[in-house]
Image (cartoon, rainbow, N blue to C red):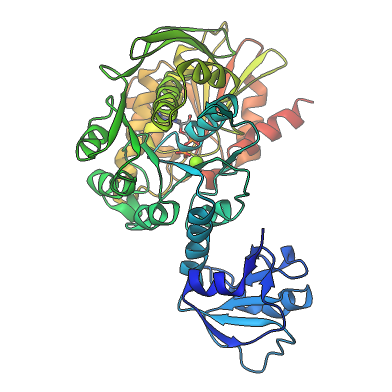
Length: 467
Ligand SMILES: Nc1ncnc2c1ncn2[C@@H]1O[C@H](COP(=O)(O)OP(=O)(O)O)[C@@H](O)[C@H]1O
Ligand SMILES: [Mg+2]
């Protein structure tokens, strides 16, 4: 919907270095290859690239306004407007915040150590089925695409807001102290949820207490007239929620939103009775794993907080589908695949192993696992625990990759697995070759590891090899 010069200056508190011809511009973009005629190009300085180097490219492509944080002497800006700010990353957030306040959708924000993207997809699916104040929300819901949850991704998400959007569901992620605080300031949420507090990103956040402090910033920034969803099954989340003064929708054991009598629906998902206050009804989820019941309850609680009716919530949950590489289930020639390779930390690893352990399976349960990153000094302990968890879950074979593979192996042996049940691959192809020799119809395979481990490659290679 574009920007006027006045709006840009008001939002960023920047200063005009050079007056251009136009006073109205198009969309804000940070990737010069996405610049169109009239765009505003904002030069971000990242770890690897400095957007200021791409200003000439942006101008060539027709940018009529550029936002920079350092001077670019000698550059010919032709007829473009140049705005200088102290910090372009901050300016990007400020512009997004401006748009959010201007268009004023209801903003639902989601953070937590695990389950953010899953919960976000569930909430968005619910909203698409729902009515608010008598009006259907279909086609009027903006959501974070994929994992655009950081100081660049969240602003870019909010900058996609259109006048017709009535609700925005956004994911807030962190690996450094203060990030959630800033993201919450930008999003100014009406409703918020912290799905869980667990050991993740310990390199940046130091300890689980540090994680709690960081995630708590979301609850602290939810509007007073808004609502928060509180997971009573997570003691740390419960404590964070206790301080909130506004409306609270609790979920989990003893909460206002609860799951009863859950059962598996073969390999296609789970079903349970959703209770919300006095309302109750069946929900069919297209997800495996008990942790996804928790995510569904969180999504339901957040939607209730936003004013959605329980019947709409049940319909929406039934429509939600796993996001790519998060507990994605498929059948490959009679072999069951759980592709959870998107990412891993200790809690999500334990949840995935539990899911594999619980699945109905005629053959063997095989876990193909890579290292968990960003655990700092806790790495050794957590990888040993991961091996032990695999043994406790009675996994039949472990196929391991990564620098910590030997540590995982020791944990598994200590937990009672036999050496012949554990194979360590030299690389993706090697691990896939070992797997290819042994995997049979009726087996179930779980693929998981940190993003950098790219464990989906083992699956791709296995498929090609067996083609
Ligand atoms: N409530 C939960 N508890 C533990 N693990 C979970 C939970 N929800 C999802 N997971 C696992 O965490 C991983 C990431 O899920 P995702 O929804 O993408 O979370 P996030 O966006 O927080 O990284 C997946 O492997 C998923 O199976
Ligand atoms: Mg995510």
